[in-house]
Amino acid sequence: MSDRAHRHAFTLVELLVVIGIIAILIGILLPTLTRARESANRTVCLSNIRQLGQAIRDYAVANHDQVPIGYYGQKQWNYLANYNRNGVRFVSLLGLLYEAKMLAAPKTYFCPSEGNPQWVFNGDINPWPFVIPPIGSGDRQTRLGYGTRPTVAWPNAGAGGSNVPNPMPRLLKLKNKAILADLLCFPASVIYRHKQGINVLYGSLSAHWVDFKAFNKGGWASIPFDDFQNAYDIFLLDETKPVPSGVWAELDKQ
Image 1 (spheres, helix red, strand yellow):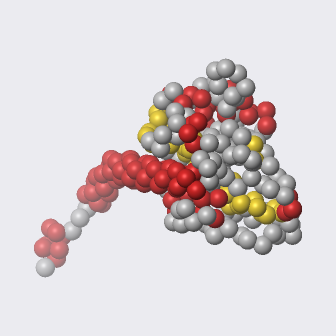
Image 2: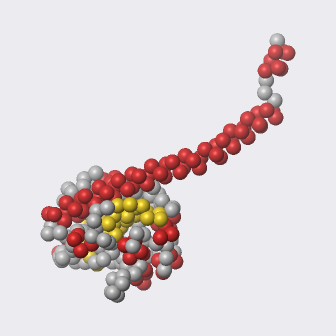
Image 3: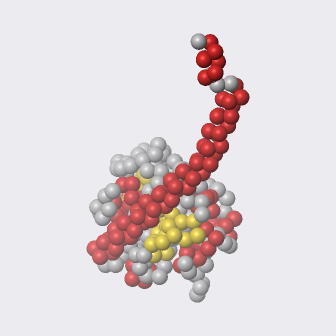
């Protein structure tokens, strides 16, 4: 009996060999699984952007061709949906699509590859649905996972005035322009999400993938992570010249 048990037992060396083989297999398979998951997320993200494009078109039809794109405060902040800070609350940008019931599915407004809690769906600091009553102090704002072309500043008129520009940008004038994309606050927005590029929607309502190398240029390429400044506005989009510049102008060429 003891001889048979001895013949079938694993030695320590054999166990270490098996563990080593398993570790090698895991090392080979994990990157493949990670790439497959990211590929699936990119597809979902592109689908989200196309659905948002249809909602933008529907909004334009109902609102004399006007579309709710632009930025609030500074051009990096082009993703705000529900402002709710220190007793002032209003809906802005693509939040108007949700408010008008043009697109009710909440996860469509968010990229599945995003990990930063500022832009994930219904995170601890990013509530969904919108917090409706104005809060007395603090910050309970909702930020979406996609940014709009920062072509017009949205006003903050407080609780008593209009917080929507008049007029808003018109869709027909944006046919060949990038109007919606994965976040472009700084290069790290891309690196921490899809890494190799972004999905972009154009005014024609076509949407496609744009490689990082095609727009990682100029001053925008040097903006540090989580650094928001009005001084960076020209790096996002400068339309004051005959030939626009900035990262969104680079997307227009793709």
